[in-house]
Amino acid sequence: MPRRATFFRLHSWLGVITGAFLLLVCWSGSIVVFNDEIAWLVTPEVRADPARGVRPIDEVVAAVRAHYPEQQIAINLQVGPNWAHTAYVQDLSPRRFLFIDPATAEVRRDDAMQGYTWNVSYFLRQLHVRLLMGLWGRVFVGLLGVTLLLSIVTSLWIYREWLRSLFRLRRDAARRIFHMDLHKAVGLWALAFNVVFAVTGAVLGLENLYYQVWSRAAQEPPRAAAAGGFIASAGRSISPGQMVAALASLDPAFISRVLEIPRPGDSGPIVIRGDHRNALIAKNASSYSVDPTSGTTVGSMDARRARWGTTLYNAMDPLHFGYFGEGWGLVAGYLVKVIWFLAGLTPGVLSLTGGMMWLLRRRRARAAAAAARYRAADGRVPPHDTGDEARAAQFAARHGFALGLLAFFIVGYCLQATIWQRGWVLNEVMWQHWMVKPICLTMVCFPVTAAAIWLGRISVNPTGATPRARTLGLLGAVPSGLLYLAATAVLN
Image (cartoon, rainbow, N blue to C red; front, top):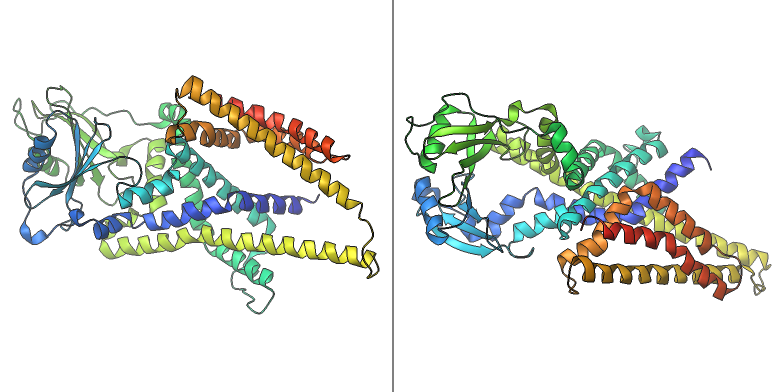
């Protein structure tokens, strides 16, 4: 088969298999670009009136402590004058999420972070990041980034004369031609954006798999402050509000965003996370660790001076979600977000137009085959078609293959329920380890998966009677089924 035809088949099947998932992930991602604004619109407790003033940070900490005196808490300071403070209570199950009025330092709302539907903006982000399927759902979404990148590479090989496609859209042509022109035009105009989305999505999604290796190679260790790094008078205790004020003088480029406060009685420092202005780094990637009993900075992290690996990784999140323009001002920030919103829609458009092209091509092929059979019969009632037996045998083999896989899935569920999960309820954890994890691992180990599928296809294309074809189909499920069992049995 010519190389171009091979790339075309690979491109087509990548789209057929992943198109619906890409549509959901990418269109939800476009919405998530404005996730903070959506939260502000639909949640009254997020909104604040700047005319009412702002209470000191220490009063906000005291208000949260009054509700949860023994827990570790993380307070998110307001990101603008029209926004409320929020807080996480970390060591409860489920965790709690609080909204605090900056004008009164009162807790206005206290939510249990249970499931995915407790908050609209949280639901939208988790739908995009992990398709509501936990840790392994995030890995699956990362693999979709890899398949999107493969689709881009194969498309560039297929459509090598791409300059002609930039401005050509034949509206009066056949539907398949129109969808083909639209598919190529959208893909080429959004090429750079989709490469960014694919690479950053793959890196962010797959970090759960490669974290250990990556952390040794590139993760920045906590950097100790210089000797004599006091942000208060030496030896004197300091409150969280005083820490924020002192850091504003010590490092004017640093904007304090999050206060991570340990449990009362713990000897650990208070960690203040935040951002450095006009830097292409993830939110809250810089930090200071301060001993509240002495006012000493016991550790710090300036994300602008991180190692190259950490610098690259920190750039992934703002590039993926399009919030890097916020440091350039309000207008520029929202302009970048609008561009990212529109660009994020294009993979979904490509999935739709590519799917229409595939369906129309199959319909045309079936019509051509039917016309050929009719011509072979010379316009009369077609004679007995020996191909009917082959098609019936192939259908029986595929039916047997599906039944065989179903049997392996049942065995996998029983193994998970009796050995690892210790329960038969199909909850989120069970679903991850029963289905999502095996899918992710078989995609990662694609050469082994391809070999198992190839072995199965030998038996799914039999010649012979239908009962024998069904038996061969059952046997053909064995390689893929054993691979599935191996994937579901690891990393539990």
